Length: 359
Image 1 (tube, rainbow, N blue to C red):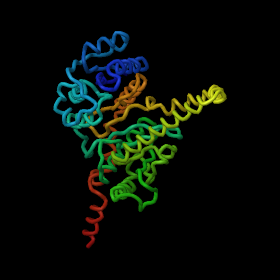
Image 2 (image 1 turned 60 degrees about the vertical axis):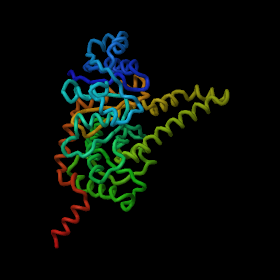
Image 3 (image 1 turned 180 degrees about the vertical axis):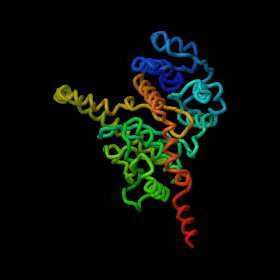
Image 4 (image 1 turned 135 degrees about the vertical axis):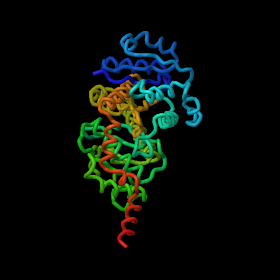
């Protein structure tokens, strides 16, 4: 089955056009049903395509005169949405010329442009950035929000949980993903009022949704494998994500230094190489590349700016799977199950209304 075209912002990312084209070509070799709209400077894209005739045959080029820089403020980028490769890739999704968009460019600008062009789904107040993280369990972990919203209320967190569970079912195949809220402790009285309200909402709605709400989790336990979806605000989520990535780099660098410290260590490395290669693969962010903006009327995927060709290919594969599994329709169905009353009115407000009605 041929999927809708994927619009690729060929100019985004730290490494530029060549890596984005190499990544799209790798994805195309792995899955010949992928077709692309490559957006950016046409002469540079055509030059990069010379080495990839298979991708060239499955692609159309949309010329863009301008590029969003990594330092550009979202408000500045929005003014140039009609001329930049990022803005035109998202606009292609809005027009129906592509089914989804992938960019490795400025995250804030991508979020702003996507929200402005595609708008949020009915029943969703704010889109959230979700990504997959490795765990010790059988499946990767979905974590959101990772930076799109620094300040969230209980209603936002409940909506994030519903969207995250829908995404988890697609990427893990689980019928009822285990969902937890990130907190400073697992006891019910811990955390902010918004966290406690969101927990009450999710407990009340648990039986109506295809998820299993298990209360709170702490940051040091998110990779143990006993939870499938971790929900938090974008401020805490971004800090937690970077702490996990930093710890992974620390472990990798420490092992590298240890194995190079002596002849005995070098011999030990040769003996343990299969295990260290497995560890390297597990910790490599390119193997989990592709964060998704959930809650929009369209699929937009953010590739890490420093991703290599394999990482870009993984981001494209994530995008294609979300199209194939109808992510937006799944989220819409879950929102309908829980009902607008649960996701739009905080627990405190409902409790106050109930108390008033009982007087």
